[in-house]
Length: 179
Picture 1 (tube, rainbow, N blue to C red):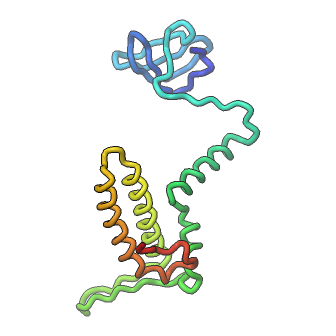
Picture 2: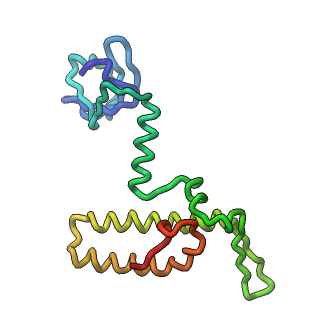
Picture 3: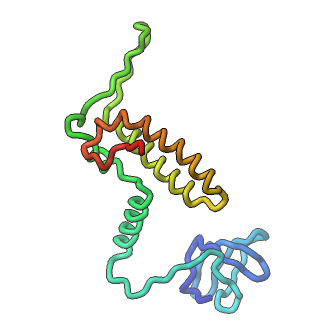
């Protein structure tokens, strides 16, 4: 392995010493922390290899930070997760800066007020978590088709219960559906 391929905190595997973590890199050697102690090894002759899968990108035409940002955004979108600002954009305009007020029947107890944006964010997160749960159930290798259908019916009932909150959404496509 070339010294240029190493970086501090990289996990490596050595044929004799096992797993280790790169602590310091010099011109021709690296200090690697193994279970039995710190050892200085020349990577090109020491027989070390990465302990984790590595990726290599070449011919990249955009800054790395932009690539990472685009990758993270695509992953979040694929999972149905949104930034808090994006969640507030889904809230109907008439509800912006509104409050949810909970009045207990017992007059001696204090009323609870919550910003509607906070309440709405929790509802959207519940929707997103239900979507992720659906994906995990449908892709689960050990569940039978019958078990998947049975569990999916519970999720559908949850969606049905959450339709009460559809009036908060600006767009119909963001709402809960019970079917």
